[in-house]
Image (cartoon, rainbow, N blue to C red; front, side, top):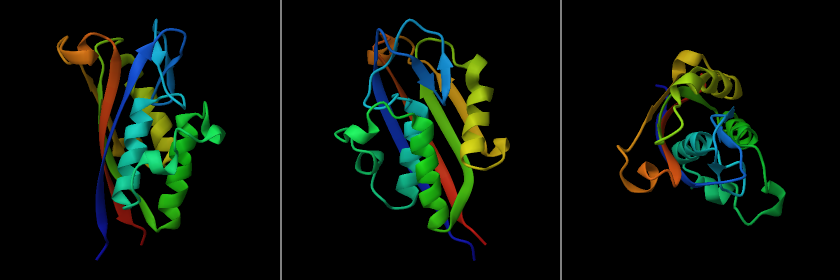
Length: 161
């Protein structure tokens, strides 16, 4: 019987001026970007955290601490690719991913397909295994006030045959 494991990831970052907004590996035109030690890609961080969780290896903060000068400004695509390699070395592959981006603005819909393609390529899986949706918080809380963005992701991984 093939082993299945599930992981959940969550990430949040503050929106600030003079930063690029990168979500799902896509640079999105917007007046602000997300603040972080890396490129602060909340979607890729949540997915990475979910994979790390499914593997029982703690969280993204342990794997890529924000105190490490080596990872200052690192692209989250690289972080995800590194964790993908660990997953494969441990004998697993992606089953599927379901992620929700929480952002009042900008609209994510025009970028979702490109995000899915980038993630599928990094994780060497079919695009059909990646689901990304976006929602607002109806102007409530820090997300509604456009002070930050968040993302949640659930990942199912299965043992390689």
